[in-house]
Image 1 (tube, rainbow, N blue to C red):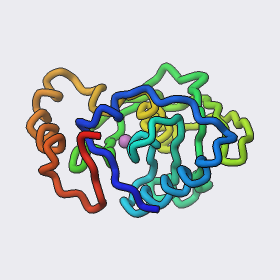
Image 2: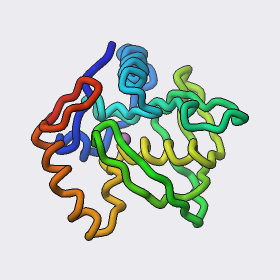
Image 3: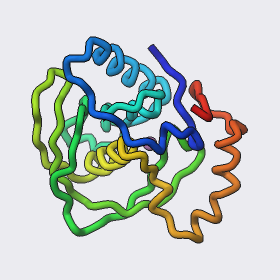
Image 4: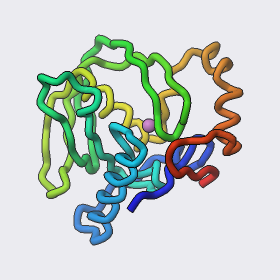
Length: 182
Ligand code: NI
């Protein structure tokens, strides 16, 4: 089911998400809703808090941003952890379905080692790099109540303030159903 995407300004986006109970009978529906909502909004990743569920779950389908020769990266990530991050950071332009119309250059570690449970409840450990590492870190931040704009300089934050206010007040038209002040 396509659910509205919670916009910037909603307290749920600033909360720390709770671990998922892997045996929760509601989990398959949550995962399905994340996929439906992400694809409808043409996103490459979506975290549960963005559909109003404060749980440690996100989905990624990086295909649209990957090189054609790269193996397509698609998956469900439950109770994820970043075990290790390379000290070197690289810049990349980021956007977020909860912040429509905003795109900014953000520096993040180029490669990370992660652990998570997949949708079958299997524990996985992987080393990620490139765009896949980028998306994972962005979605993981959502589970900590963090957004990419938190990494901007004070000056840059100042500059985007009017835009943030518009989003917060529901004055922004997005190409997908949205919800604010949740
Ligand atoms: Ni986001």
